[in-house]
Length: 141
Length: 151
Image (cartoon, rainbow over all chains, first blue to last red; front, side, top):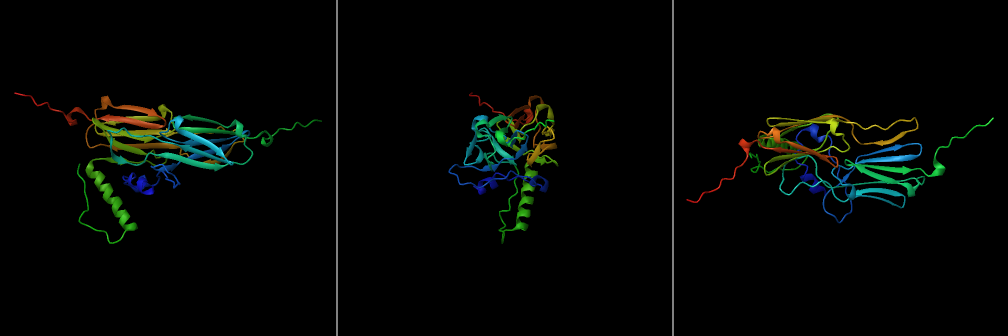
């Protein structure tokens, strides 16, 4: 699998271009093709965690978000595919699927997790469970 | 397409030095093939280039961009892409940034092609965070099919 991603990365000519490359990850998989680690931002707000993942070239229908045993996983089944008549002449990135997983603390209200995909960016809202939200306590005199 | 190949050489051992040599060779290959792709500091959108039936197709991974933040220019055989990727999380004072991997900032990439481009016919589209630019060769460089006339 790593060999495949190496050959498709031919073309990083200068050190500058080499400085950042898509990271292929090794996974036990029966599917062919490289799997990439998606870049992710995680923001905690008062009432939720917001997970934003870059998944360029991926259709919303091809994203699978799963929660199993407290592990949230983001997986795409396929990415951008060039048209059959196109011959690669210069290549900096390989297309493939993305994968990322996170262990969630138990303070997420799993029944209200929502996901939205737009312009190759996945937005996952993970609402905090009611008892873990900060509460404002009125001080009475 | 001119290609340099070191077929007459066998490398005694592989290693860092050889890798550097390999990367130089690849760079030289590209130079002779007529493709020159320049990078940028900061955000570095990945670029792939394909040859199609009537010209070239460039794809760039730019997820979550606003179209007004991408600027394309074509001149003769040179395409340049510049723009800025902006990501902001409203800070209400109780926002905690746990992880920030998605790159933000300005970028500029330039691609030089071996032949001139018909700038009037360049088409660009943006879908699922991938910028796709179709760059047809100018008529003078396009292969023509010549019908053989029966006498």
